Image (cartoon, rainbow, N blue to C red; front, side, top):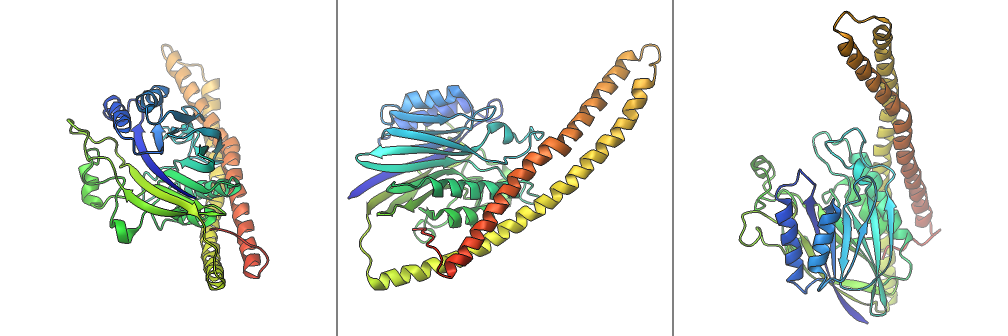
Length: 409
């Protein structure tokens, strides 16, 4: 059995009222797909409006007649998949933590982010295609969301592991907002058994965001990080009886839209062509070598999990401190609020006093909400993943003693 599969992923940067030239770019993105019969599957992120999804879907439906949008959260997940092949089932798993509701300027929480799955039927073969968009970094110097990305990465890996079934290959394509070597990246690959389609030896340096040749990269970022970042990926995991060979990897979009001076998005698209074929039978020496390789990977995975657990322990300690801080701040504001309630406002100052009462009351309610409900939601989400990581690390120790078979082929 041999099967070629071509995948493209792109963060389209479709934030209403914020993303520049959005209407022109969405039209151009759809037209690019409509002009190319080269893709079996297209994974799109940051498609934040129904209109943009329908526009791209309708323009591209000649070659990609099957599609699915993953609805979630307040504005939708921003995730959709277009396919040349039938989508026979879908599933969406929302992450337990995803930013903060009060940080409206970031907005990740409102997207209801998670990992989506489309199961494709290609001939007689089933292929699982996953799509995800991890929490953005925003500030590398003081990254408040590192623990959230660690949780999302491990959660995504568990979802991929749990939905493997009898598929001949699993593919994850999306903007993961984590660079190679980052903790979230290492946890995702180690826990899921996914492999890169990118090969540095063959593909050299590769930039998918904040690239110097992208029209939307600010000049200060071009100067600060001239090589940009690689945070968009197409990853794969071999099936039980099938394996993948990467035939091609490239960034397929031109630097600007034809006839325009703007790029298609602030991210670059990533393309990979794969050959899926039946696994050959291993010789005894190959089986021994594979076992040793698996044991070495298990040891690295245990170390990576240890790093992740430390990060989550730190944020759990911070959450305990935050809870006390919010309660104290609420108490400090309640005292002047009681005085405002008891004081009869001077003539002409009634509206000012009323607005002050409303402002103080709103802030007190916010602090109490953050100290109680929100603190519990975030703590439970972090704690759940931490316990799962500890369980996985214990299982690895058992595996090293010959107790189980953790197949990450």
